[in-house]
Each structure stands twice: as C-alpha cells, then as structure tokens.
Amino acid sequence: MPALASHRKPRTRGRTTPAVGLTTVALASVTLLSTQSATAAPAEPKPSIKEVQKKVDALYRQAGTATQQYNKAKAASAEQRSKVDALLEAAAKRADKLNETRRELGSYAAAQYRGGSIAPTATFFLADDPQSYFDQDQLMARMTSRQQKAVADFRTQQKEAAAKRAEATKSLETLTASQASLRTSKQQVQTKLTEARTLLSQLTAEEKARLAELERKKEAEAERKADELARQQATKEKAAADEAPKTNTGSGTGTGSGSGYSSKAEKVLAFARAQIGKPYVWGATGPSSYDCSGLTQAAWKAAGVGLPRTTWDQVKVGTRVSTANLRPGDLVFFYDDISHVGIYKGGGMMIHAPKPGANVREESIYYMPIYGSVRPS
Image 1 (spheres, rainbow, N blue to C red):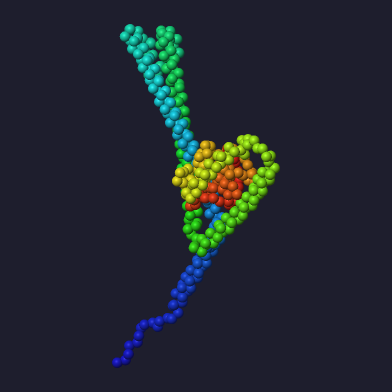
Image 2: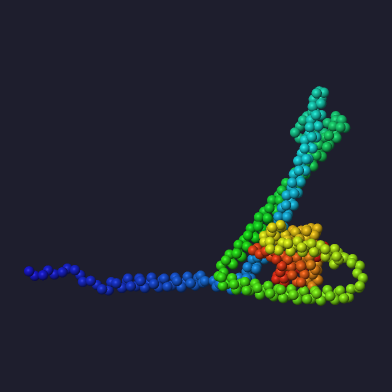
C-alpha cells in the first residue's frame, strides 16, 4: 500500500526573530531606567567628622536659644497668671460690693412700696438696669441725700466692676498667648535635641572616636587660652599690688571692686561648686538639675542677689567688664545671640551647665565664642 502524503506544512525557523527583538528592547529599557535612576538620585556623600561636629554644635546652640525663649515664655506666663488671679479676685470683690449696694437700694425701694409711693422711684430701684434712670432730675429730687449717695455709689461700682472684668479678660488673652509661646519654644528645643541625637547615633564607633578626639583638641586649645589669660591677670594683679599704697582704705565701688563683692562672689562660687556633677536639663532651675541661666540665677540668689531668669535679661544687670578684667563671680556670656552663660571662677575658667547630655562642670571660658561679661553686684 502506498504511503500517504503528509499535509503538514514545514516549520518555518525564522519566526523566533521577534522574540529576540523584544528581549533586546526589554534589556535596553532596564539598562536605560537604571541609568536614569542613578542620574536622578545620586547617593549623598557622607559628611566628614568635622562637618558632623559643626552641625551638632549648631543644633545644641539652637536648642540653647530655644531654651532661653522657653524660659522667657515660662516666666511671662507665671507673671501673667499671678496678674490674672489678682484681677479675678479684685473683680469678685467688686461684684460683692456691687451686690451689697444693690441690696441697699432694694431696701429703699421696699420702704417706698410700704409707704405707698411706688411710682417712679420704686420702678427705678427695682429695675434691672437703674442706669437708664440716672439722668431723671425729677426722680433724683424725690430721694433723700442718703438715697442719692447710695445711687451714686452704685453707679461708680458698676463702672469699676466692668473695668475690672475687661482688664481680667485682656489679661487672660495675654496669658493664653504666653502659654502658646511656651508650647512653641518647648517644641523647638525638643526638635533640635532630637536632630542632634539622631545625627550622633548614625556614627560608627570609629567615627565617634574621631569626634571625641576633635573635642579633646578643642578643649586643649581653650585651656591653653585660659592659661594665658591667667598669667596676664596674675601679672596685672601683682603690678597693682606693688603700686598700691601701704595704707588701704578698703572702700569698694559699685563696680564690685571692694570686699563686699568679693564676699558675695565667694558665696556664688561655693554654691556653684556644690552643683558640679548635676545634669543639664533645659528649663531647670535646681536643685537637682539646671540649665545655664538657671544655675547662674540660683548661685547669685545664694549670695542674696536676685537675677532675671534668661541670659538676655541677666546680661543687662550690673556693670559690663572686659575679659581681661574678669573677677571671680562675674558672669560670662557666649555667642552673638547671648544664648549661654557661665560663672567666672578665675584663671580663665568658669563653672557652667553646658548642654543636654552633660553635667555642670568647670571649663575654659574660651571653649565658646565670648559675647561679653557682667559684674552683677
């Protein structure tokens, strides 16, 4: 039997070409997208240790400024709260006095009612708003002098009570604004501190060691400058002692050059030394922790001298002195925005509450850029 012919068409081998083309296009597309992605979002270079140090110092400084803003808002809020409480108490007393006078007027009206003369006078006394009747001359003519005085007192008390209520309302608005500023400043401090901690937490152990080395070098340079200032001051004091007359009257001046200031300064420094080792906490005024201006305020309070709460106000108290003429007990302020302060202890050194994460300690006044110095008493 003859074989049947096959009706299948022979397989064409050229049909795989389109698949190859599609694969090539896909690979090219992936390559192109990868190239574009690399171009569009290049990896940011990691900051150097010096840049990290600079950034962290800036964040702590900004936190220090925000801390002073917080202290100012807190002091203003406390002061305003006291004022509001006093005004509310005064308004309540005015209201009591007003009610007492109203009762007296009511008794007059009742007496007139019992006497049968109720018409316009009784209407006046029993009205909810006697103010509308004050200008009626005919009515006033019917009153005795005692009644007229009671009405006049009532009118005066009404005005005073209204004025106190308005003043209290305005003070409450001011208090609300102070509290809002307090919350804002608190948030700013927390934000800056979080940024600084986050930046430090991203460092490797080796990078942290390098950062610590930079800090040691910075401290060493600051101490070198402090030693130089100490030598200059010692030379100056010796020369002054040699030139001083044998008889000294001991009279001090308002600039704190007398024994009175030295006695206060000893108390200030004794207090400050006793706080060494206690932690810096922003907004704290003791006794277990301090911020920079909280420490200086508490130290001078121990010597019987009251200082304002913030660095911005403390720098305005007392006499300005140059760095070369610093004496123990003087306040040294730092940075252009006056956001930090320490207590000069002599020899180019100070006692201060440095920053979050650090404790009250002695340090060179040259560790930070000096703004100026003040002798408080």
